[in-house]
Image (cartoon, rainbow, N blue to C red):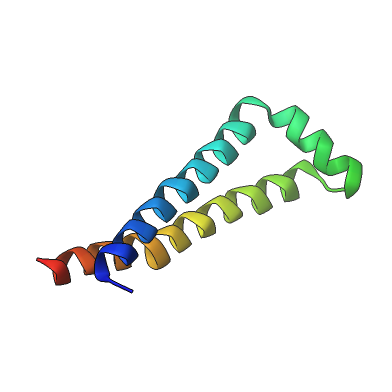
Length: 81
């Protein structure tokens, strides 16, 4: 496997994962009641717990994108120059 293949893989991984985060944030921001009701239907959960879980999850997911996708992508860019 070449460095260019890994760069392409990580680049597309950043794009796909960022799209997932943006969709998640938009669902929480603009469809909050629907999202809460959908989750509350499966698991009885308070709104405070729901908010803590989702905002914590969004932050953790963003951190994982930076650590596992974006940093290795930039490291490969530096190696390839």
